[in-house]
Image 1 (cartoon, rainbow, N blue to C red):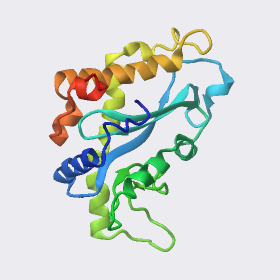
Image 2 (tube, rainbow, N blue to C red):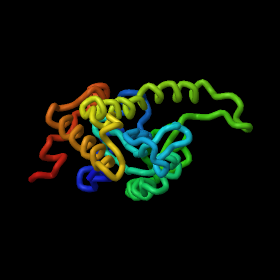
Image 3 (tube, one colour):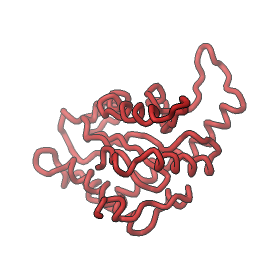
Image 4 (tube, one colour):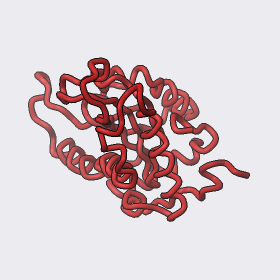
Length: 222
C-alpha cells in the first residue's frame, strides 16, 4: 500500500489533487511532488554509505500529495544509490505511463521534482539553463519560483515523520542487522499517514485546502 495503492489512487483522485495544486500555484497538470530522503540510522557500515552525504544510511523515494499523505514510498535502497537510479528501480515511471494512457486526447498529468528527476517520464522539474538556452524567460522564472514554494511539501512531510517518531533519528539505537532499521521508518510513514487521516489533515493538507481520506477509506476497512 505504501508503494502504490491502486484502489485509492484512481484517475479521479489524481485529477482532484491536480485541481488543488492548480488553486495553489496556477498550474493545472501537476498532482504531486517527488523527492528522496537520506535516512541515517547506521554507523560504520560500508554497504549503505553515501559518498555524497559522507554518512551511512538508507535512501527512500517518496511522492507527496496535496492531502498531506506520503502517497508512494519506495525503498530502502543503499545510501550510495543516486536519485535517478532509485527512480528507475522503483517502477514509478511505468505507473505514471499507465495513468496517462487513460487520457484519450493525449493530456498528461505530472508530478514535480528537483532536476535529478526531471528527465523521468511523467515528472516535471524546474526550467534550467543550458548551452542552447542561456536565459530563462519571465514565465519560466516565475514557474520555478512558484513551484519551489509548493514543492517544500515533501520536506515538510519528511520532517513530520521524524518529529512524530524521533527514534528514527537515534542512530545509536538503530543498527543494520541488529534492528529492523528499514521497517522502523516504513511503519513510521504508515502511522504518520494514519494520524493525518484521523486528525483530518496536517500542515500540507491545510496549505492546499485538500482534505485527506477517512481512515476507513485510506485502509480500505469496509
